[in-house]
Image (cartoon, rainbow, N blue to C red; front, side, top):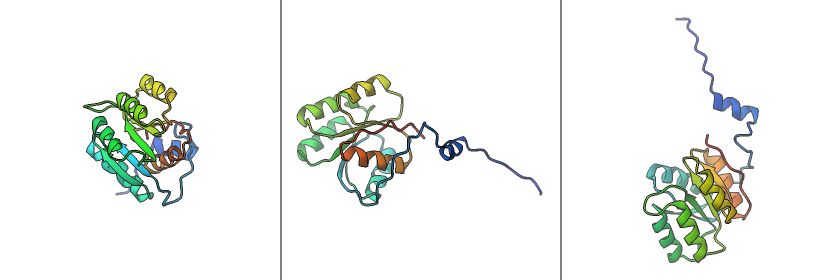
Length: 162
């Protein structure tokens, strides 16, 4: 009785202070739209990404790895506004998937995601035309904003993990 607990949450303090770690990207209006191919091997992550994008008005198609992602692209050539591509996956990793996809579909817009720091691989793919890197985990609103920018062909500032 009479005990008081005080919790300090650093991430909340950073967000309130406008930390540079999380660049501000204007949140797009609901119903932005666009067809997104999400290539992500982890089912729970794929589900969260899909729900966030669908709630924002995007039409989402998923693939469990790079090989399946390339198959989706072949099934619907020119049918995607953006490929959201995980960097580390079994069967075919992000860099190989990116290069094969861009060889077959040079105009394909690609936004990278990573749950670990893949600085060298990411820098190489950014130099080859990827529009940005979103580090996982990130907030759904930051993801949606980044996807909206990339769908318009705009560069996305790196979104650091939450």
